[in-house]
Length: 328
Image (cartoon, rainbow, N blue to C red; front, side):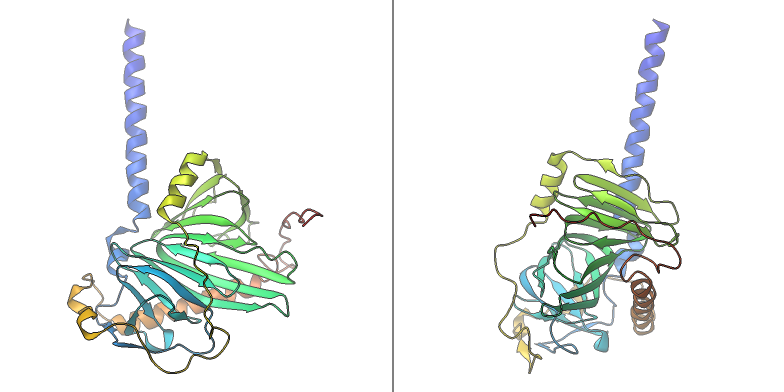
């Protein structure tokens, strides 16, 4: 009788520990209140007409629900409301507000489906079908994004990297979801997927490989743990949360420089700055500039050193991805 009583107490304590751990994990993935406030600078002004960024478009918006803001690096205190067919440019930052989502297609036909309260930047997006070259580097500041990356088996270079605050995920062609917070990243791999995860706190260590139907949760400053197997029910739930449309993503002028203004919204549809979330940005202009410069500096350092393998060959050799089957 005593033994049975103690066993019940032990089970109760284990259950409580699991509940507390799950709650703490959920709070970390929510990226805490500070990051939630930092979605937009409080002095950001939403423009009536769309102005293009520099260079050629690297992709375009396919679907939008709710309020999604695009910020060019060249005008960090001006925002533009996203709409279907809006072109996107290098160094654009995309922000989805509460109850909002967006689907974006890039020139290589890779897609991203972005949930509410998410912020990410297109630091680099180069694609040349003739030269068989792709090089993409994205930074997730916070939020939740599903990536469907096109496999380019015959390309000379086909790198596609996503950086969070804790790690860099290197991709060749995959379907996966990243949830990013202030000090925690969770990556879930779907079918036919292989990712290389590099720890930003310990970049000299070889990357950890994440395969189909595996998940890893990484906290800043800690070693990347071994991946855990997940059930297909979990992946299907995530796919339903972040679906992709069947609409094509390219527009007719995507390979040419964008010219002129594109009127996206009428006067009565303009969103007042007062309707955006409150924030504690005291020096938003300087902070936005500092954030973008920091991202660019990190991108240059990481991308250069991880060009073909994740770090330079004279430091250490990264285990190569397995070769594609002969029939492909």
